[in-house]
Amino acid sequence: MNLRKKTFERDDFTCQKCSTSQNAKLEAHHINLRSMGGKNELNNLITLCSICHYLAPNGKESFATYIAEKIDGNILNSFRKYKNSIAERTTFGMERKFQEGEAITKPPLGYIMINKKLIIEEQNAARVRSMYALFLEGDLSLTKLAKIHSVSVNGLKKILSNRAYLGEVKFAGKGSKGTHKVLLDSELFEQVQQKLRTEYSIKD
Image (cartoon, rainbow, N blue to C red; front, side, top):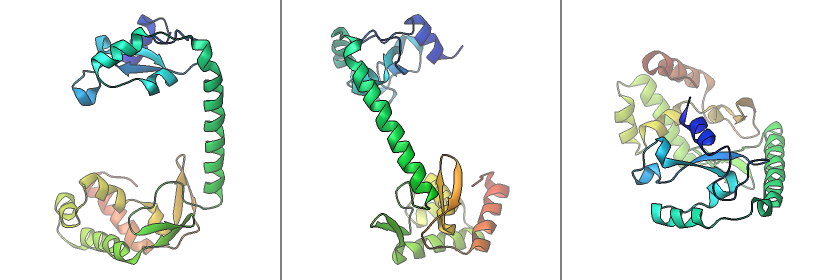
């Protein structure tokens, strides 16, 4: 049994702040945040609804005070319904933008957003093309290439496998033809993907 389920069962599937157990998405909240040294173990986890989880303060002492100040979960029900309706509308809007070929996320390196459209930004576009060419033709590791271009290794991996450079957009795991201009030659892109797969086991 995983820690999340153990936490919910111990707390009777009930938010420990507002006592809501129905019509609420539950979260296993870290009392002492992992970024502050907290451990991922049962005695450092507590069940909160999504709203109480979102509003929870950092720090063990302030969190203890927060939990001690109980509230009526019924007060939050209208906010839960409103939150869900916003999420549904947001998802619908993003899906519609995707179907129309518009970018959903922030612009990848080499593009800028102007009037909600991706436009090639030549200075950084040249950097992207250089990364692809050096990776494919040079004898450089990802670490060395990342250092040359002042990006992280993970950032470089994302750049080297981003299909936005082929004029595509992506949403919810699906790809579609975008409305923006292509930045890279498709043959170069596919050669880089092949090298990523064979030498680094990375798939785009």
